[in-house]
Length: 510
Image (cartoon, rainbow, N blue to C red; front, top):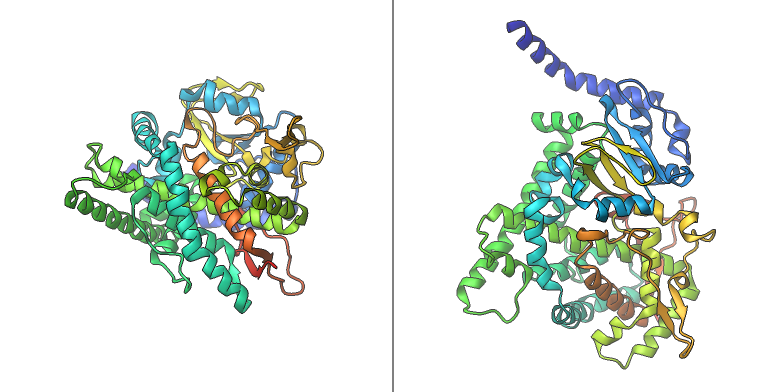
């Protein structure tokens, strides 16, 4: 017994050193060309699996796995991780339907996903399964009726646009100031989600662009949590967390800041509920606090989940949208034509009926989805429709980023930004009519029972912002220094981003 304890202690002491040596050897022996385009399956070795390829492509994981899926005959492949763990990646619509609908109860978030993201998301809706997920979805669904959506567009988005965003853009145009438009859009989305979901205005989008401890902490927490999820093996981050070093130490500091912010919001809402016999409007947080759940940690998890959904996804979609529009002036002109046609309509009706802009946003998210991959865990042995064998406990990831780049789904012009692929001309009127794709071919908003509740709200918010901004301004990517690559780099944490931000110059329209 003593020898066993001694051996265990010795192994634990040597583990950090072994991990360090493994990572260094991986960076030395990994094939440098594997970090460039390669559709070939990564080579797998005994015990360590495809760790060399995983580490070599750690900075372009989404693009790397997408390349492999595009070359796969079934749009599916199996990645071998260390110690015999297998992860299935798929861009096959039949498999996506199998995962998200027909065998929904067989594929859940699972223990690996939940434990990896639990420090940040806890038991919030995006990290929950079973009855907890059902309860949160049921309460949340009441917030997305037509009355709430109209209120959101007219009294939240439009006010934030008119009172904050447009004056900032006007000043930037006058002073020829270079703005990080990604940062601006994140601030806009953060104010909006806090107002509509919590009845709280953080006033994050201000002319001075003030730094915010919460925003920085949230960014760090999301990034490090994502790195955990995509690490070569969970043992790496678990060891660092146990020792309280490196990125895990930074994560705990960031998470504490995020949770303190959420608790302050909850405290303010509780006071508001106790001070007033009835509220003028019922927000999402009020619904949860009135549902009988008094556990502060649980409500905190809910707040953090909705900040993640409302801040990061819409701002990511809009960032890539404005870049694509700037590169395609004919699309911008068509959007402007639509804005002119709808300019006399009430705000909500104007936004709701912007068919071409809706298509342009859908096309942008096809190429640059806000959530480029999502992962489920098999609760029992299974076989996917394309014949891929899945063992219990296997992680299965469907890949919207790769799916938007498959010629077999979108045609030989898949690389072109072409909103018309979503449109048809009505025979009688000659007007555009939006023609959507099924949610298993285009799972940008998920599909099946977990399909995004806020899909319509997100589109309304984005279309209102696009109309308000493009009607008055041109958003022009700032000229880079000579020799610097002009095309932005797509990176992904729990949601996608533009590496280094999106520097732009704002120009008034004549």
